Image (cartoon, rainbow, N blue to C red; front, side):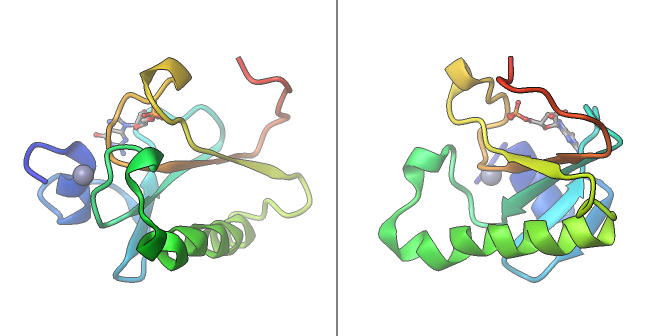
Length: 114
Ligand code: 5GP
Ligand code: ZN
């Protein structure tokens, strides 16, 4: 997708600190971290929002949970807990329109989120 920031990160056009890459999903450090650990997990395939995925994307999108677990282990977040967040649409706070999951940890989390 032309002019998509996260597509450019996924194809290496824009630099980022990539911490995971299995060919279909990548994870990288958020440039403006909201917690000691703040990673973004994205499919390389472009979807503007979660509402753009299709039935055939079930396996790809489901595998995000497994990647989140792997990264939580790598960052020692099992005991303290962590949060996996997806903002869908500008009303929910989405600012980059390429589906991404925030993996946040390393500090106490409040509920409900703001
Ligand atoms: P959203 O608000 O769409 O759920 O989250 C977008 C996230 O992308 C924000 O947390 C923001 O800090 C992060 N972000 C925006 N631009 C860049 C960038 O160029 N590089 C990285 N690594 N993260 C970015
Ligand atoms: Zn994209």
